[in-house]
Length: 454
Image 1 (tube, rainbow, N blue to C red):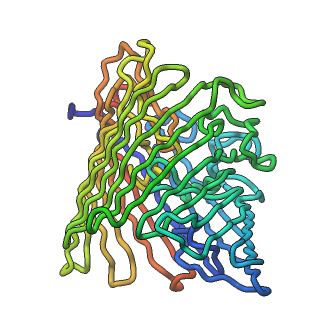
Image 2 (cartoon, rainbow, N blue to C red):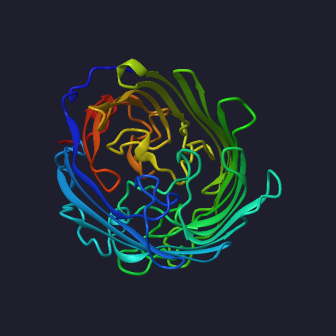
């Protein structure tokens, strides 16, 4: 498995020179967990405004592991501006609307960023980002009282976002048109009931959940239904989550799409977070069944992590994690066993360079996080990656196949390893921050075996 690679020095790197969030005003924490502040400006009784600006520069070298491939070396600047308004006419009703302008500059691999569907994660000039109404119940009746109903275009984050998340790292992020009904009291017991559809990003027209003009994605043509239960009381010092999620797109694609998919994937899983003194543990285990492209679908994925906090070392946390997701060892047997990653925020989990999804993988990560001079958050991580089935695809963070070996090819399962370093610090506390990052990927034998020149 660790066969020596002729290209072990061949690498890809990413340098995030700037990732600045200028928080002169911000919206509620539900929408921006990463923003760092809940400050808003009240312009009239019950009416407030907020917003944010973010710019990020990225430089990528040998990013496709093949000098003859377009976009192998590239750089780009990503700008994101958001402006929102919140109106609370009654204590039990709140309206929220937000516009977003997301643009990319210097992307050499994109021929026409206004019509090319590949830029949906990074480019979408002024569009409606969120628009919803909350109906709140401020007087709890019992443990599972109806707390809130949110209707409209919104962000949905479940658990730590391994399966469903707002994907805030992407320049356009992810939003949904739908309904979320929430019961219970946070930090005790809660239940969320979800019915929604991901909004397609269309750089040339208003975004819509049923507009597949530029996309053949099975995910943008899918409904998401779910029950998500969280319990803080059952086990001491433990947050326990249980869920059933269904992704369904029927037997035919929506009008304008070029592809029919026929998916109905059910995911039953559990997730936990537990603390015991200086130790902490978290894990997630998911089984899937149903149909994928009309095939019988059965798959499994698991995550487990242990961390240890060293108080004497400036509260440095050391962690070791393992991630697994099943692959498909035979694409001709009428079954589909590649784990379906659903709608994740993969950037947080499997390397900062976004080379992997929670699909067809074995992954081991060792990491350390600390504060530098009590002002900057520093994280260092090293990851190793194998394919669970070497003749299934290697899937990138976007869930698209990065490479696929032919069924007859003799290939290694070891894709490579990645070293990531990030430093985040506040320039103006809770208003302006900067993130600097460097990533280096060491190509493994699988990349050698699947390279066709370059």
